[in-house]
Amino acid sequence: MRSDALQRRETILRTARELFAQHGANVAMDVIAERSNVGIGTLYRNFAARPELVEEVTVTTLQEILDAAHKAQADLSTDQHAWSNFLDQLVNLNLGALSEALGTALPSTLSTRVLTVQRQCAIAVSEVLEAAKGFNLVRADLNGVELITVIGAATRPLGRAFKDQAPQLQERLVAIMLDGLKPENTTALPVEKSL
Image 1 (cartoon, rainbow, N blue to C red):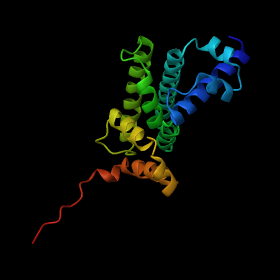
Image 2 (cartoon, rainbow, N blue to C red):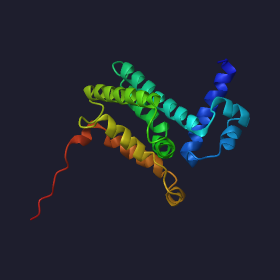
Image 3 (cartoon, rainbow, N blue to C red):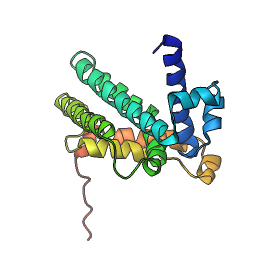
């Protein structure tokens, strides 16, 4: 694929991911094309139908998680910020909003391609998590599924009333979530005894 065609395809994927996260996976294909600054024909030459685009956005997102996990694991021994950088990357992927949108758009039986990268991603996240535990950067009782689930929950879209009343609430919830992953939070809180 020519470099300009590849760049257009990447722009379409990036734009589709943003729109899916904001509006759900049923956003009109012509809106995706318009926001990507390409014609509808170009969009359909790259992705013949919505399911194909949804699958590619899913695979691309999982690949970004996989790449971030590999980088964090490679960097952890020399850079203690690698763990927090990894968490920031996961948060910035807007996994909660995206998984909500894609979860309803993906077929009930996932393709081998999605399952393969999903499996690789789960292994890589677990490996970087275990490495971070070895450096005492994260609580020892956390597993990879819990990590992704917590980040997904913290980045789920908030209702309009919340956004209007507390515009910084999403960032605050993410900060609270990230604080909860720190190792000092693994000790149980003392229980008050009644007199």
